Image (cartoon, rainbow, N blue to C red; front, side, top):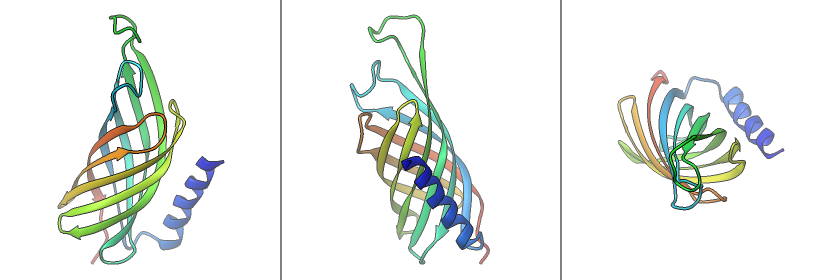
Length: 159
């Protein structure tokens, strides 16, 4: 139910506002769980689609959806089979441009499939030209993690 609400909200914002003030792109992320939050403390790698829409000159709506894979060793740390934990996520929120190129961002949403949890991710980022670097941390749920994302925005608004 929660996941359907977030998907509907993101689609509504995109469809009502159009793409004239929008930016879109793709990003790669490294997801590092806090110690002890997942057995074997795996590092996740994700691929995401990103969307931004201007609300005001300094405030943007942001949305992200994607896939991440968390690989982990056996619970006892021994060599052998590596478990894979796949997650699909849908998040949305607000980005406030402090001053070019630095911004603050807050996203909320849901990670489902492998982790199944509601997330709240405050973040800080740097945007230079079309390259975006973002460092965030999930502060809710059973699996808190740090998220480092590097992306490129190829769909830019026209001035």
